[in-house]
Image 1 (cartoon, one colour):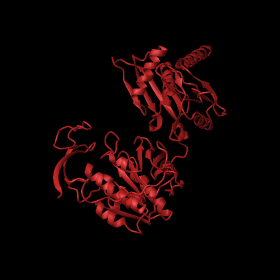
Image 2: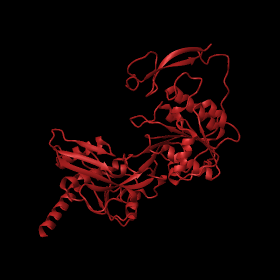
Image 3: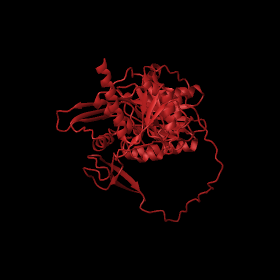
Image 4: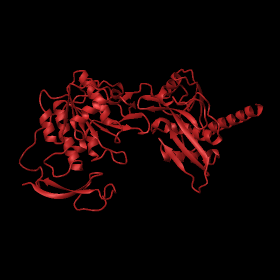
Length: 465
């Protein structure tokens, strides 16, 4: 016979406790335990009831391409790996107001224009609010079925059928609840149970399910971490609300490449696709200034040029400030230590500010050399070489290491009119033919010597003038 018992579940990490505690033992969060009633059966699986045998198949079967449905937005298709896959579950997270509901509403409008039956179910807005937002965005959605509901049982009964929709959007999963569970919507148990029921139906009916997820103050999707393991694709919306740019990044994709990005611009008509993000991120570079360096980076399979800005100023404080926007602060500390220990350039009495223009966040170590060039340029108050791009990884001994996909980075720089590149050549020193003048670097001291030569030449020019 089933037996009910009380247990305490952490709403941050999902750790189960037998009794209440002020701090979770799993993640260390305070006041995050909530009492929930669990129903379990004492007996295990060793009864007389036998399970059904599983059918196994060989691994060397013929590979068939996955059927995909374009969602009418090339940037979104790019992040998804080519389009929507029937029977897949997609989780989209991001800060409030970043554009999650907007892009999904635009996607369902484009899908309905192609004749794809779609359903948009909101647990946060009424149908009238969704219609007003669609009218504000200039979307005509006569074939999109809208609903406002929170009960998973009602949702399953409405979309489960041979004539059901092919694409279902749930906005958001934290507002859904299963009535057989005695806990509030948004708790770990409710999020896990609701998503499990919806995903099972999507797999059985070949429905493409898109779930909107709230995020915590740390930028992680709220609820149990198992939710990200249950779905097939996890997308994150990034970007500063003060900038118009929005980055949709794939952090998990069973049907495509991970870490792929799509670039959008927020306008009065919703999210507009940016086909050439490199040109857009560099559009404000009018004239050379000190501390500004163009970095040739890679975001997924896409090469992208972004501007890295640095400012070095004297500090009256005993501990100078180190402010970083769009990059890893620990990596900046390492670059400053290498410049001081290997090149003899002190930053101990200087305040350092580093910024990646456009609100983009860079995570690859290939930006080390560009950051070092921006710091040296700002320290000497001398603009770096105009019409040049920089990329390369810096080691603790001061060596400059080559990075992957050098050819794609150089091609993107050449396409946008750059004429010079500072980088470490790959092993063997062979790169594709390019019109760029490549300056190979093996040690950080070579970059320092180049900057000192630029300072000397500009001083001579001012003296002659």
